[in-house]
Length: 214
Image 1: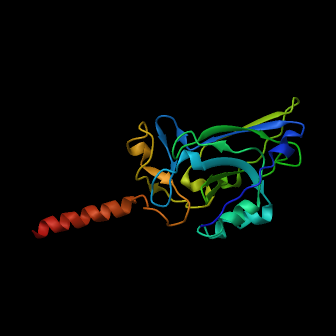
Image 2: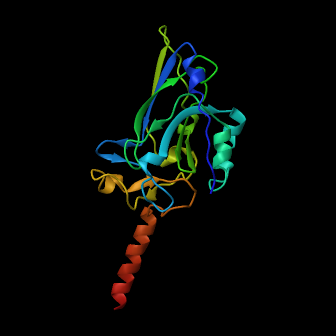
Image 3: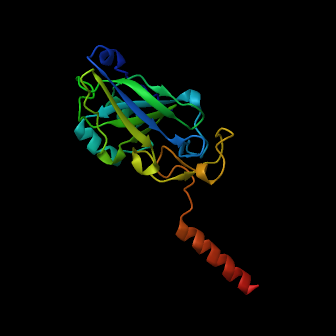
């Protein structure tokens, strides 16, 4: 089993002149969300899961999409600079948090530095990059800054599986129905994919043909 380690640079952040709050989640409670699931489709355990905010060197970030999601988790973490302590999941598979302490003007997360969200669960890693559009904001005159990244979706994944997958189990009782049916997982091709419209139409057509032949 891979052993995952991540160095938090929160002490360095605290010593800097200001702080930035980064808000991000994977659910609009209690109505809908894209749960983080393992490679069987089960919601990951909250106790084993964390959300981090930080950045990568530009050269490494450019190659994230070409890394092996089954074997390169530790390599990703070795190249990630965390800009604050991690935040906990609020329930199995779900997070909705405001991470405070990310430095917006100092050496970590300087204004306009690309901002990434990293999710860890056990020995698995996901990286969200929001299409390269998110960056640390400029702090105001009092040393405060904030950015709200909204709700992550499968298409925001740059390291991990960027296709929606079926959630099979493990969500809290309120998370039921179609709005909670699809999630995000770690390894590309590692879980049951969400049925596509064309596939469902094809299956319906086959069923119709079968009935006509009877």
